[in-house]
Length: 137
Image 1 (cartoon, rainbow, N blue to C red):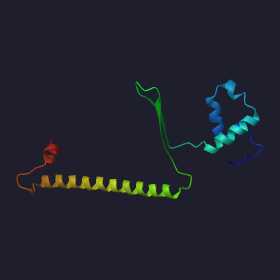
Image 2: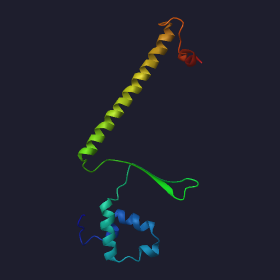
Image 3: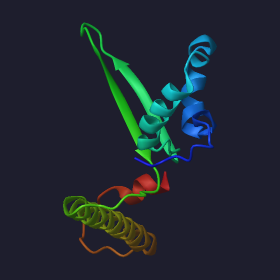
Image 4: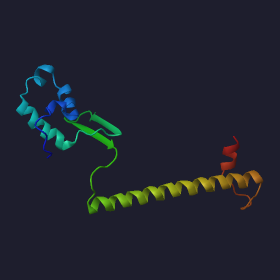
């Protein structure tokens, strides 16, 4: 927890302002300075950060007495990763690179096949995948 200077009022904190805006004015104005300081220490621990992508949704399925929530946040990571998180980050990056390479190779094969067909080169006599006919139409 960060120590806040005594001269700064807690409701000047952007995270606290966002919290107080979500409350009704009567409730927001009823907090004492001591209560606001206590709330600011809790809200400040979360950081009150704004994410580049912030998608929050609630899903209510029929015949189920409760609902599910979905949260997708994306932004710059400002914290240190532990060893497990670093390992997962490396694996994720390798997976994305492999996926991108696979996409590029498939696209190149497709382009080369179309080029071969356009030039009239027939590698396997009497066999066609139908891609050239699809592409021409």
